[in-house]
Length: 288
Ligand code: ATR
Image (cartoon, rainbow, N blue to C red; front, side, top):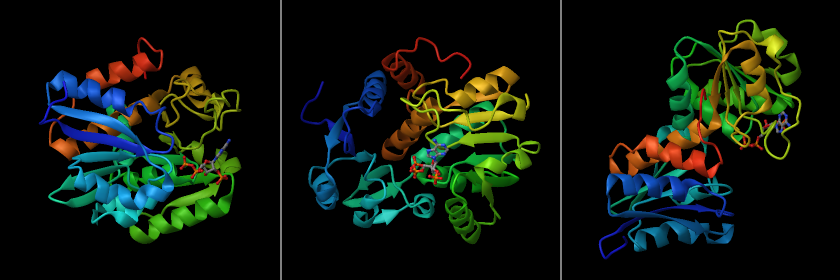
């Protein structure tokens, strides 16, 4: 029940109506009995500048930022966490005493989802794609003591630019190659992460980027796409008996992490998971 003492959180994006974050966060808030509310804000690009001062004026405690504002918003923040700065994208803002600080919990959410299912220390990781999501995940992997990171992409120049950027800012020498050369790397790969929209609704019949016969049962295969829940590459992973990780867990854990940053409180991740699965028409996440 909203009253005079309710503290406000929210998500800004354009569009924002499709977001499952309000449902997920409000289910958590309710289950913890907190006097908070989480609301969607449809903010157009031309209003991004006013967003931060407006949120401060309204005493908003925390915001998530979604497409297309994750990069643009950075220039209006007072502070930025070092991982978010390296990634160059912010999806979480915390307001404290008039200071707006940006974080990237997409990256942390992906690592939590991975680590829940597989050990990642000293592992060889193959990252498919070289866009914004690949950038966030590849930087996060550098903080996890993996053995190697290889970025594959359809256009090699994009993979090269990302690999070089990460190599210049971290202790890792990130390798890169064309997606079509994936066979060269798969024998030594422990973890495959798809960061491309391959197989994402409505392109559910896209040919998977890696087939079962190129995988092995000791691998872990993580697809950040979660519409549909079982993408082509995850179907291939199932055929060979590899460990599978769904992007819906990354979405869940980025929300858990944002809540912790804003409030210092551990979220009720079970309630959050149940409500997003129900909203996605899934009764049971099963083996994902
Ligand atoms: P995001 O921010 O979601 O990562 P992005 O920055 O547009 O989105 O990057 C998408 C990435 O997925 C790119 O690496 C893109 O490859 P190119 O750089 O060669 O265009 C890759 N990608 C997009 N659609 C793809 C598909 N159908 N198959 C394989 N790779 C794809």
